[in-house]
Length: 219
Image (tube, rainbow, N blue to C red; front, side, top):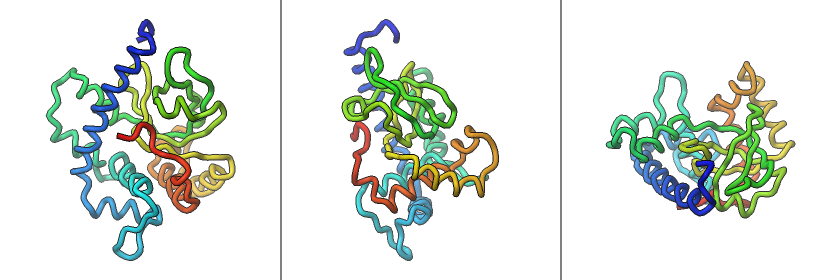
């Protein structure tokens, strides 16, 4: 990957992005309405038994949680999907699916532009740098910008799983005040806890932050 130029990297990225989109679309079939409503309720997107949202972007936050998180003893939407997905071992479809299953959520800060394509991001929870390829963020995100995202790593570079939420110090202080009452452990344990993403998404809904951004590379 290091010897590939920008054109080759972006071609590879777009190919994997298309596969990722297919997997996500198929995985949604394994999210029952009850699971979606449960996540929507946690985000403040329900009134009684009705789903209410300002935009589809807000609903996608609930889908993200239903696909990638689950309470102890319960399976994630992605886990149910992989049991039925017909992918050839070692194929790009398999590589992408395995990367999605291991996707990590965190708050990431834009450090600088990557020398070839994309951005160099710092995982603020784990203090690790990652090379992110995302055409929209490369064009719009400036150094110092902090974003809550779930990233998969199917190649030497990482890719978003779709949801991108802008965050700032005040918002994260509120999130940590909530999390520290419920979750014990180091920063990695907090980032891996399903309630971390839920807390960030809930504030994003309450503050109408999703109206300020669009999903990275929407398909």
